[in-house]
Amino acid sequence: MIRIVDVLVSLVGLALLSPVLLIFMVLVWAQDRKSPLYFAPRVSKGGGQFTMVKLRSMVVNADSSGVNSTSAGDARITPLGKIIRKFKLDELTQLWNVLVGEMSLVGPRPQVQSDVDLYTDEEREMLTVSPGITDFASIVFSDEGDILAGSQNPDLDYNRKIRPWKSRLALVYVRHRSARLQLKLVYLTAVAILKKPRALASVANELERLGTDAMVVQVARRQSPVPEYPPPGASEVVDSLASPC
Image (cartoon, rainbow, N blue to C red):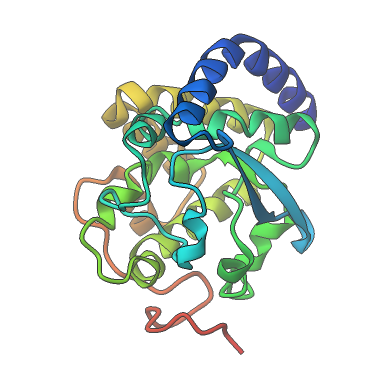
């Protein structure tokens, strides 16, 4: 049933949104006469590789910096890219990945290999399902760039503050995935663009319904600063980006 929803929604979404995407593709191309699409290698279900399609929001060759996490003030983001990111237009092109079966509408966000190499054994459970365009964590941490703003080491701060909670939220979906939850998260993702407090309240209610740990629910409400915490399956907060033994 989940795959049927993926195909139907991605087909309709691509048909309805193609005019908007085409307009922004032209605008991105007009900035520097370079491809408006960014083809990003990501880890797929089972640990393989696939190419994720994104509407480009950064300068060309932005990934050559070696920094995977992006703060709100990242100089690699173009002025047009800020608009693209605000309205999640860079994610809409991934409906193509959903249509061809490389991604799902809902699932853990696909990561680069270097980030997956840092996973604990418990986090590797996220690789048992297809990566998705959105999930609980995508709604809760849609302002990830703002959380990392001003960081001297955004990759390390991401692993100390955001990864622990994103992974826990992703695992909640992995362990309770259903067509009903899939459709609800797609709906709440749309709501979050215009009314994030309302979406966060609904996410917290859904997490409580699923019996999620109270601390994870509290973080999901985003009513206080995001605390540093160990990733799932670890006992200590990340202090370096070396792969676990």
